[in-house]
Image (cartoon, rainbow, N blue to C red; front, side, top):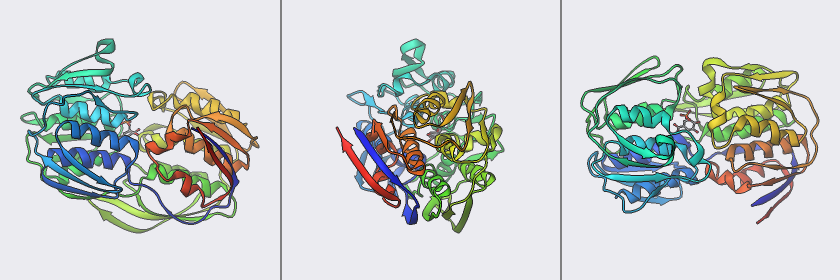
Length: 434
Ligand code: S3P
């Protein structure tokens, strides 16, 4: 689907954003593995999480999705059944990697696949340590790429020092560790998002966290819970940046998850000079939540690198847009992981934002943005990547130029309702073509 978007700011009023993608996946998976019912509210009914729901249904779990309310009839740790068909993870790396962790310890055979983007993304980061736990996994390129087939085995506990800070790796190993006797431990070079640790604890598992080290006691009994999913800060980020860079804006984004392992985007925006105010702080289902007010401000370029990267990895495309409208240069380093996301986001940011007139130089592990260039109307391609699509839209609105964009449907991966939310600004034209 193609979209033609023409509009400008300011952006004012109040919005809510859809539920957190990471937490929604985890609520489905832990709900499935728990005893009794799990009721999820605020669920993200985006394509990625719906892919997880479909896979779990094929594994014999009853899941009823009614918009943002979901009921999962847990089957217990040992109640999944061998699926009669291939599990399709669609575009979702979280679905593939977390389910690999679950499937490694099941007494049956499963085949997992995904769309053409996911089939190019590295799976060895979970396959290799899962094999050390005893899993039998086969696939293309010695099991580096989907489709993968898994013959579940008895799991052995593992102490794993991960070479990368990845919540998907950590979570896959913790999920496999549920099936092992004894303690499974994962150490990361920097701390990645900790939603799995928080939710496993809420469901009754014994977890210990010491800095970047997590330990899980295997073979717990998980108990179904009521889970309230907060709004996704990764989705809110598009509007926090949009309001920051469109003069005269004043926006409140309600009910945003502000788990400290996710708030790197707020730290960087503040350092750039953004006017952000967090209020109504509360904790829901073990996750910190707040409302965020943002007013437009003059931004300046900054350096982004080191331990903050895992805390904002998904927000780097939209932070590149903030940098395009900031004074001076912004340097992004230590972010080579961007190359293996839904698309190579370093190239996508440099080339697609470049079509609108942005000055962005790709680097091996990041990019450099020279702020202050005026943009021009252009045709760009989201490359099927939801976050590149939404960042392009914000850039065009703030630059007051017309954007014609291919693969616009990808926004539904994580932000169904994005087009409606954009109407907070002054949209002159929003046309869709097949
Ligand atoms: C996610 C973890 C991150 C993030 C992804 C979702 C998760 O990936 O980029 O969008 O839900 O665990 P990595 O764990 O690979 O860094």
